[in-house]
Length: 339
Ligand code: HPA
Ligand SMILES: [Zn+2]
Image 1 (cartoon, rainbow, N blue to C red):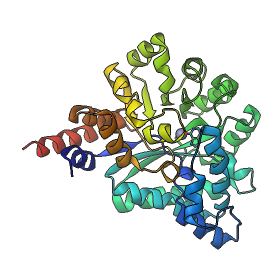
Image 2: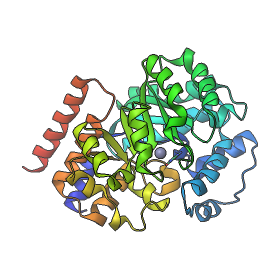
Image 3: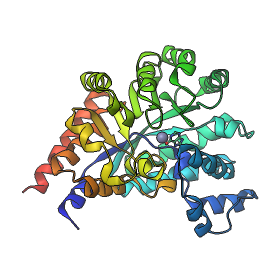
Image 4: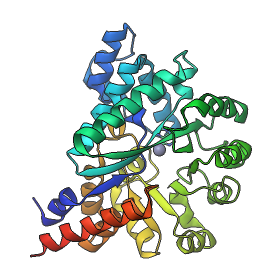
């Protein structure tokens, strides 16, 4: 194993951009389809892999919403979440801030409580078993109306002890952050953290809107910020964490080749970038695979890899003392590796 790959494996990391429904591996999809008597349009795992040849975000989303139809019971949401946590425990992930898409389930007649209780029972079990801490972020589907987002926020009201923030995902083009200004303001009033996908396919203007109108605490993706010098300066000045997802960018054709990924440029511009897997079951790699393949493709240095791991905790919604403890642990791992 190369020394960089060994370093990636040994570094404690946080994952800040992960859609739980996007961690549904084909094998579990088949198992849940069988368990629940649900028809899925794939006969074999090979069929599924063939279908995962995406040309855009929308192309992926069309399949992503089909996949999640197998999730019905609280046990299904528990098993989905537990499988993800077991997998990233192997990657030395210590903290996760995960997204879920309640409207993808409530619109199919699944109770909001079924979804949240299944997810949180697994988050609790993983903390007990492996010490992995977590935050949970409810995403509004931006192709739906702001009114529908308000209804979802209302459903969340009795679960706010377990929900830490709101996010914005799904089809970006044509659904600017400004569409969700009021519901994000309401979420802020409830004390929830706010994040939004912006600048994955959408223009820099959408990132400006997310900052100014949604008052985000963290920016998901943000690749297209690089087209706007004023925006880059602002993101750097405010040390806005950007949750970058290299293998997702490759598979959704945000970039043509991983060698073209702008992550190194982001770091050199002083942006607080992190590496994340987005929808690992669909994009072919969990967090360490994202680190390894990106490091190999664009030549990340040891110092840059350490910075990325540190940024994952700096950009988290943990308390300052908890963040400091994780950063100290990273320093200890690095010191040990160099002796
Ligand atoms: O990468 C993504 N972008 C937008 N919406 C999503 N929902 C799941 N993954 C994504
Ligand atoms: Zn995403």
